[in-house]
Amino acid sequence: MAGKSEPLLIKRYASRRLYNTETSDYVTLEDIAGFIRTGRDVKIVDLKSGDDLTRQYLLQIIAEHESRGENVLPITVLTDLVRSYTTQTGSVVPDFLAMSFEMLKQGQSKMMENMTVMNPMAKMPGFEAMRAQQEAFIKAMTGGLGAQWSGPAADDAEEGADKSAADELDDIKRQLADLQSKLSRM
View 1: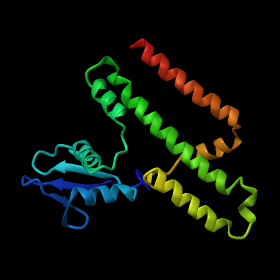
View 2: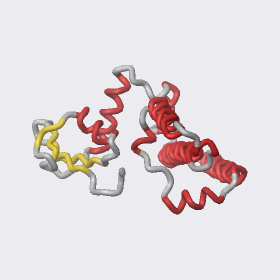
View 3: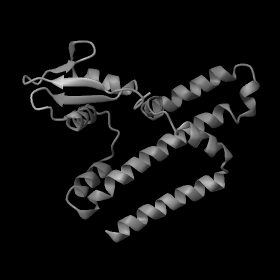
């Protein structure tokens, strides 16, 4: 769902109030977090200057969740992120994070596919209910990340079905080697 339609436009007024242009009402940061959890992309802009404030507000949402004890980011990761802003490795960090989340997304997609398509138990009575429970469990364990992510594109999924586990492992090893190479050049 995310990325397939225009992002929801939120305008920030001088009073710092946030205005949903689709529903013509004011929204809170929690409302915006809810839109994102359902898979909707958002774009937050300053009404007067037109500046894109999306990154600033997304970081604020994350900070609020972390401060309420909903910890997703370990202290070591936060510390390394702070360090990355002051070192030359900062240019590698965004690519590394994007690749890491993509690998997580692909892994979740592949796991869900394996539970249904390639599972001989899929023909058993009650399997669909068990699969739904497993899906809910995975969603709860990953903080619902799988619900927003669409997984690999259709072409990637068909291509992935032809790959063996060894090929996939080789791909991952190659990606890690590329990252290590980039880091060593820094």
